[in-house]
Length: 335
Image (cartoon, rainbow, N blue to C red; front, side, top):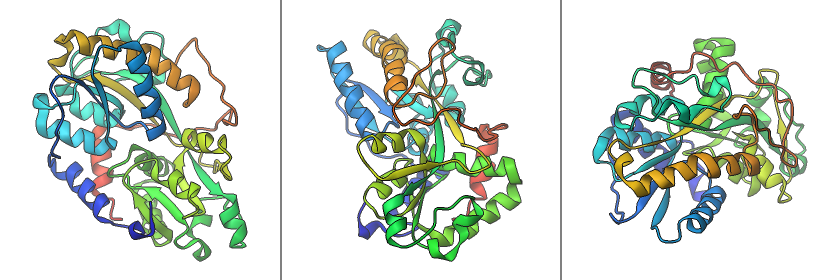
């Protein structure tokens, strides 16, 4: 991020929001002799995943293309089975539910071994995706920025409305980011829709920038552009382990979270290369990502610990999260 992007509704966000709401297609130019993975993973994980795929399949041409979850879903909805994307990687469950008609059916045993709440998949179209990770969120603080400005650390959502935090807060746009949406949904469940939407309308006065992806707030914190971010716990821990002065805080409402999964675009399951890559991604690579970056519980018999990663996380109420609920809430989002 740079200073030129310091606006609440910059062109990127507005373009992304239009893509989600109106199903506009984004042009693609990819070679046809490669396996294309469309992924919401952060840059550092795409780099890791690319390296591992090259090690596992040295003779295959595999490309990972980053796309915010809302934009990826909009492209699939627009292009349907004509999509150049072969594998949808780590898309938020609500969007996966919406694009299910355009994903390949998967055998039931593929979701064995996961904890119950991540396999509670919508069944209207059968099993269309494999659980990937639980993405927890938190209030993230750049302690040096707040100290330099002589500001106390917030201890509640109401604190974030204080005028002294104006232009010091970054949040992902819920219309383009699953991370942004989970913060909205958690407060809707806690306070009711009217009060939650009213809260975020007030909070917008202190937001420096709504980012198009969930990674944006942590990037802004690392660069010292803001002092407070509504962002991903896992990404914050990665930066903390690099030495960034970031602190993780859970307000009394608990940690909002989103579940992400991976699927195959319908018709591509017949391609043996796509099959091999998908199997590797959803078994070996998925476990490695959970162990190294996202240790929050998704497997029944596997638990992971990561340096500086919070334990005994108090989770927010994320019930009643489905596609129709998402559409309704995002249609009412005015920021």
